[in-house]
Length: 135
Image 1 (cartoon, rainbow, N blue to C red):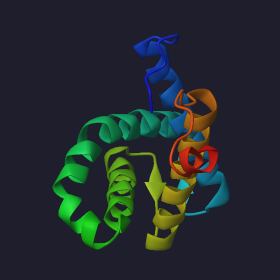
Image 2: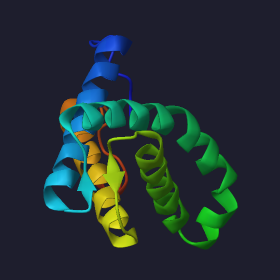
Image 3: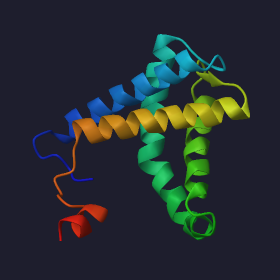
Image 4: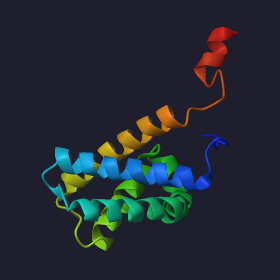
């Protein structure tokens, strides 16, 4: 992904925080095992954003060998760990059950990926297979 120069770092951070809050709220709406007050979800989005910015890259770097062996599935476990850690840190935000955590991780990832693609589209043309089709 490319950095959008039309948007300041603070604006992009605030938009990402709002997207995380909406993703966590959607996960809470879908799964009964994810719950918390509105304030707790907002704080959880802030904590989740901070953990995703600082802890997640370090964990992904450490798990590169495992990610190669598992064809990237280890990084889903890293994402689950970050969401679980958010739940452990934020007092009023809770995720109960392993499968609820798996589902909430998928929801948070899907919302983040869709919002990222919609709000911050890539400027590159002809990525991947498209380059070969046009040739």
